[in-house]
Image (cartoon, rainbow, N blue to C red):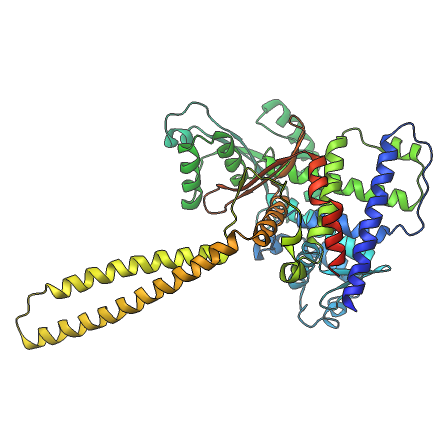
Length: 506
């Protein structure tokens, strides 16, 4: 029964999104005068679709520190709208407090774990909420997470930075030494905590500061002072932890200066970081598409929509965001179920050719790491055994102890060699899985999603290409890179064959 309801949600969502695309096409074509509005257009499912895209365009999990920064008064306002936490706990006992609820809703929307039933949203664990409340609440969460990037843990300081990166440095030490970091810190005059509304205001005033400009900052400071905020600007030293220092060293040696610049901007949460710019652009585009869905639902005339159409939105970027929404419908909605049971090997993705991709499964990587550990252990044991064999023995006690330790080491070596043989056999089996069409297709799908979540997806206006990247957390090397024309993205990933396979899954 649940599969039938999932299919119903899936079909309504996909059909309504296609109707929205037809509406957008007519808006962009100034010659079109009329549009026939479909009676079965499901605005609720699209409202949730574009809200889900916004909330997935952020970190996969909400940390304890992230939650601490959320404005608790604003959070309580939304909880009170449904008569408190008991509304959720009475339905699902594990939803015992606000922190668990926020994490659950973010995770469920990110992976499409819900069913749309009229104006209600039913999550897979049985939680039933009204759609308009959920959309408002989810938008509050995602806005909080983005604003809180610049908020101190005690909620009293709004801090962001600009960074000037040097050219032509001979070594990495000189490079780091010559980086200039300007830190902008805003507090309330009364030293109080910054509310959600405070952050919205400060973000609007400050976020367009892309570099240090004394004259501009004078006028900004004057504006903030009138609203009873204090602004301080300081030049701070570059301090990198061990992990980030290793990444910087690696990229500098490889002369990956553009990537290095972006890494440093991410570390220091600079407003001109491509990651933050890409994320903010996508959030705006998803919001705009959501507003167009409401316009269709309210039967707005094409001429009225053209007047509202923001010329700042690049047409190609808007169409790309729409294509990503379709990607969510076909490859992310109900994702956990797909991971377990969908036949990824039947998808036709041969023409999807990333220039860089890591097909190795987690199991394969774990086996490699285990073999590395076992091989080191084998070398150490061989060294021990050689030591025991060449020991000078003077007493019976020494002979006994040496023989005992030698026996233990030999038994441990035999066990280790056996484990190495076993893991090598597992490795050979896992290699076949790595090269299987099922794993190759599933990996391509996964990395595109990772690129969207990490803010590493964008539309390159110069090349007229969609660009997807995924970087390894440990050393910032590329696990995935794909550049593709929008039409090819649609033709391959959203081909009739692939869409039908997905629909027939239910």
